[in-house]
Length: 228
Image 1 (tube, rainbow, N blue to C red):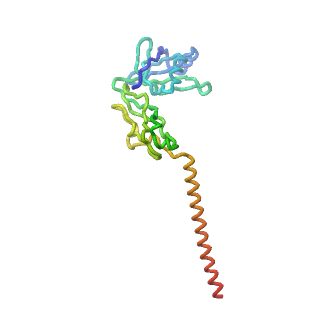
Image 2 (cartoon, rainbow, N blue to C red):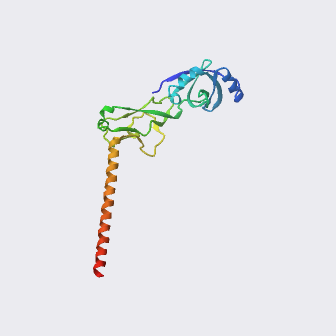
Image 3 (cartoon, rainbow, N blue to C red):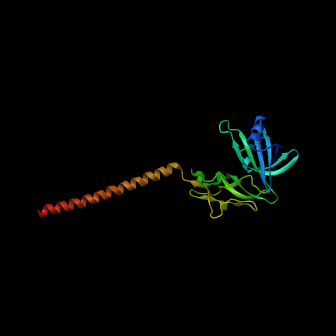
């Protein structure tokens, strides 16, 4: 399961654009903790510390204990707003997680045992349809990753969500179908050859059709000449 990391913050006086701009002038990133039927809590983070967490690429799927002046609150980040020009974070929204809370979160797919796939050994290509899967999880049971096992997969075979092991209490948000995660596709060269063969067959059929039409036309013309 995903580890719970600590994110240090401090209480922020005031709300609104003016207070947020004041925090940014101090080199801080304003944020807010909301949810769990409690009042929103305005806070701010050190820019450098926050950027290190965001750059992991897992910020929005990581549980944090936000430490505000010694008081910790369990949260999961829900949104990060960036400066459109300088591309640094300018505001963070964090969802407060109460006991027994369930949340939707995007979890990354990783694939193993490529060398055990006959289709890949024959030159096939792993075609990933979903790099992440949205799951409904208990807040304390968020998996770090999802594993797609390629063992034994032939050309044309697929991995579906039913082939992926999920922790107890965790389920995909999409429940009305067994959706595809990845497929073992034929090599591009084979696809091109098949297309060329199909085009050649179509061309040959067309030429044969024209020959038959020509023969019929010639027969009719000969009959007409004979009658004259």
